[in-house]
Image (cartoon, one colour):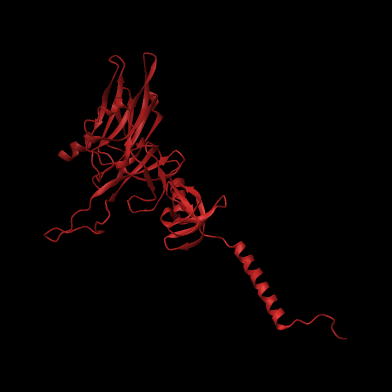
Length: 339
């Protein structure tokens, strides 16, 4: 029996093969996962073409997620979550790895104790690591309220400066200039590093006036006392010299208690020459006969460079050390050294 199906010539067969390949290619393109990027500028426009003359197709703002459709020189062709497409300068974008780094940083520090509230002096970037040339994503407006969590230092490298330490006339390396960076948490929950000089610790004027030329690094409300029907806070403050790059986070602590008879703050406790390390923690603790009192724990480096904890209690207006079971008072240690 002869077949009744029509016979295809070679041109028709070739056309069908090309059509099938095209359909298969389209199917693969629809399922392909495109590269993601995030906008690191406060705001940026999208343009319809990479040229001196262009039309605006849309805009994106800080933190927005976009898909990369293509690249051309210093521009990227992107699509927003709303489906708007356009070209944007690549310097306004960071990759998925940077975004994931910020997510990890926020998760690791979600329960980190706040050391002090602060305000930003100017618009500033939130960096993934300490350092001016490190990756940044989120931006903070001038006057933004943030919470300080930790301190670090990084070498100050200005544009055009050599990457390595310079040498003097004797061919010896000069020490690098260090600047302070603060790990902060902002209102939206983002966590990152901010250049120290971009922040002002928002300390109450009642205690800031007693700084005596020192820098207030952190402060905590330890207790409250009643005076004329009002609650007045009593503070622990951490201070340091007013300069960057110091080896310790703070070198002095002061406790301010409220004198109810004279209606003023007084220094109940002061300790100097500390090699202090953040964070400091505060709590309320049951101390048996004395009842429940405010306590705070300082972390300091000893002569061997080890970080040790020291606990203190406030029984207004007296501050004393709370010694661990095997701990020897400092006066006894000093007497042993003299002997």
